[in-house]
Image 1 (cartoon, rainbow, N blue to C red):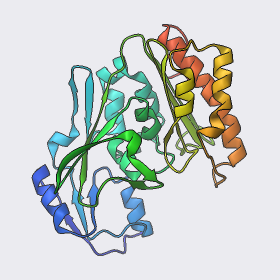
Image 2 (image 1 turned 180 degrees about the vertical axis):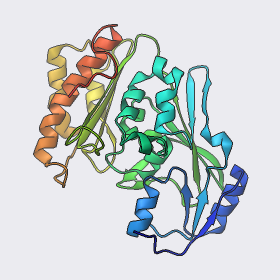
Image 3 (image 1 turned 135 degrees about the vertical axis):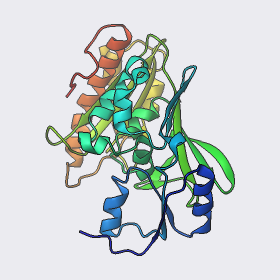
Image 4 (image 1 turned 90 degrees about the vertical axis):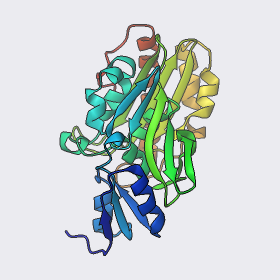
Length: 295
């Protein structure tokens, strides 16, 4: 299929040039990996008047580490995450997540930040980075600003980004030693598939728990009530069972072509229990190795 739209194309060499181009047009779109944007163009789901290709801005393609803070530039791909020694050592759950994104070819193009900008409810980076309290950096005609990932998504394919703004990076603090995490993604089959449901869990020293879900609400959501219940308490079987009972208050799955509402809810009960147990065990220095399938 072809793209039956009329729009301009530009490939600026600097972020300043990119900002000027975005500000001069009414319906600009940023092109990075393009793995979501190009299909949307083909289907007529978006109609830009210019594509601003940021792949020529080298500074946006770096993973930077300063102390315990990691910053992923807008051009960092999922395969870049898989190849990062820092991520492998300090945040291996993110490599579990990245390894489940589509295929190797797609992971070579698809950017982590682009996945968040597309804002589909099943985006893999959403829940997994939410539990790390990630923040998105934006640059636009009114200056720069930072948005917590908790506040980023406003609905299916919708975010707080203004039309002329460019999402330039996402940053998060690496968890302290003695932390454990788990990422579980349910698909219809092995291989390249979108999530029917997903859950990310992070357990830090002192039993500080973070939980987030994907594909079970109009946007990736945090399990706030579950976090409040678990906060500071040892993750016993009884407490985990209590947390599972809170799922209907945290998620609102629907029936669509990939799954029924009832199936998503029932399997999420299993996924949350396994995720909490695996993360707690990893925090204690035991449990399944990262990369082990939990469902």
